[in-house]
Image (cartoon, rainbow, N blue to C red):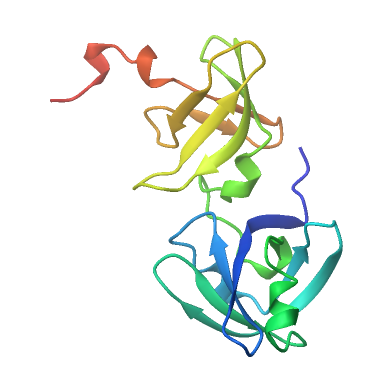
Length: 177
């Protein structure tokens, strides 16, 4: 699986104020990515894509207030509401060994330790201490699995596969305490 040049970061949640700022809500609430990059790509609800240069970022607990070069006034910022926000992989430090960009996990085939197909990773929820992988397959119940070593023994990015040990597969001997 070849890494995509763009990583989906979040979305424009709302216009902020009258000067053209927007509130960008990252999928990972703890993400500091917007502080580290100078540009993003946005895809509007109508499918139009364009690069925007970041003038300023003000983090808040739930979102980042962003001023983009060339986006001036309330009407211009409202036109971006609902847009998906991407960052360029080349603008980011590569992840360390054994670490992954959360967006790269979406689309991986999920199998159990015996190689049985469980479905595909369709979402990553970053709502707790560790992200949760949402795995779906037609005709099977949805699985939500913590992205932690106990539940994800291996990730094969080049092969497009992730090995999952769903929580219900752990036996009492695997748990400490």
